[in-house]
Amino acid sequence: MRHDLRDVCMQIRRDTVRSIYRAGSGHPGSSLSAVEIMATLYFTDIFTCFPDRPHAPERDRFVLSKGHAAPAFYSTLAHKGYFPLEWLDTLRTVGSPLQGHPNLQKLPCLDCAVGSLGQGLSIANGMALGLKRKGQTQQVFCLIGDGEQQEGQVWEAAAFAGQHHLDNVCLIVDCNGLQLVDSMAIIKDMEPMDAKWDSFGWHVLHVDGHDTDALYDAYGSAKARTDKPTVILAKTVKGKGVSYMENQAEWHGAAPDEAQYEQAMKELTTEVKA
Amino acid sequence: MNRVPMRDGYGKALLELCRLHDDVMVLDADVAKSTRTEWIRKEFPDKYINVGISEQDLVGTAAGLSLTGFVPFVSTYGVFLTGRGWGQIRNTVCYNKLNVKLGGAHAGISVGPDGATHQALEDIALMRAIPNMTVITPCDWWETYKATLAVYDIKGPSYVRFGRNPAPVITSEDTPFDLYKAAIFRDGRDVTLFANGLMVHEALTAADILEKEGISARVVNVRIVKPLDLDTICTCAAETGAAVVCEEHQIMGGLGGAICEALAQHHPIPVELVGIRDRFGESGKPDDLLKAYNLSAEDVVAAARKVMKRK
Image (cartoon, rainbow over all chains, first blue to last red):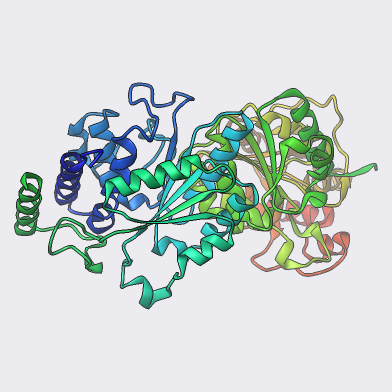
């Protein structure tokens, strides 16, 4: 294992469950599936960023389009040093910079903020185009959910990135297979995803979304492409790391009660020692 | 009277902005000829991006460009920009207070023969309700030109609304223009005619007719709908004691709504509204439609007579 991210991923999982438990609401399932995807960006050398200078022009960009994964994103940023870890306990409370879904005005260290699904890839494309126009070589990463692909705007943006050969865009699809009500396959199946993205002019990769080495290699492959945008279809487990949440659609947007919280923290502690 | 389409003012201003500023970008959803962004496509091809027939992507792409330091001017038909792009305008552009400049073309019923699907009659209401948004409805092509230049200097989102057809030119290059002020175009004592867009011309004509009846009407061009120039509006209310609001928009949620909200809270007086009365438009020649939908000077006169009786 080239980058041992197990500790930081465990911390992010613990923070995620704790902050949602304290807030009494949030989206644990969708946050826990995306932990490795974000940690591999922020805690390896693949993603250039400067927590002390969050707007440095030479930084790479990250757009969290599935804004409901905010608890895991906030924890990632806090551990990276963008803001104090104590802020995590203010999630979803009045006056907090950590809104239920991110906001740039309240948390200016972000590259961008999205709450309404389907909007992030267009923004990432605009950033990528802007960087190209300025002759800058930074990469724009964007994370969406698999169910989010049901939004038509995603495909408007997919066509735009293909048309303009935005090779500085790397889209990650968190393929946990579940959405709010049920499985994606039952509601509106977006498979075959690879054929869809390929036909829109994208370079398509499949990875295990919890394997940080595989993610790292995929990000590297995206950065190396010079002809087309890359989409990484990251197979994940919704609720990953908390046994009773795993692969359960009902944990898309529900907070654990006290007993459930304690069990989750017990499980997340055990695994980090193993 | 000389007539020039307001959209020519938009195109002229964009050309000038492109000459002046490296950071200006012009985004289109495949209606360049209609919005006059065609002029940019020809003269500044590097500053022009056609995202295709994709209004949601149009707004989102502009948001991303603004986050890399560009000042995107985004335009398509007002009904599609503010309708199909509303969620993007609200949640991405306005909530994050991004520096994106929206241009809503083909505003109002005077779009004409294309019919109700293409006539933006709710766009002001849609834009005005969103925090951080500045909303402007110029009265002619010179004002469209000046407003488009002026919004470049706003640090945040804006919506400038303008019409398709040749419209009376009632200002000149030299007419004073302060973006944040409502402008008194004609003084009067008995009633204030607040108007914007095409209806400023109708209000001026109405004031001429009213004068012959012995009614002294003040005409105020309220080109900025948000933030509303409360000082001027309340002063006019206090000095004339009655008002008519005239606009090429639904009477719900547009300038009439904005002024009634302001006056009800700060200086209540009788108000009559001239606008589209909760119905869709239809196909027809612009002038025929303005008459058929009670947006003519005669309709403003009738409303003024009515409100005078309520004083």
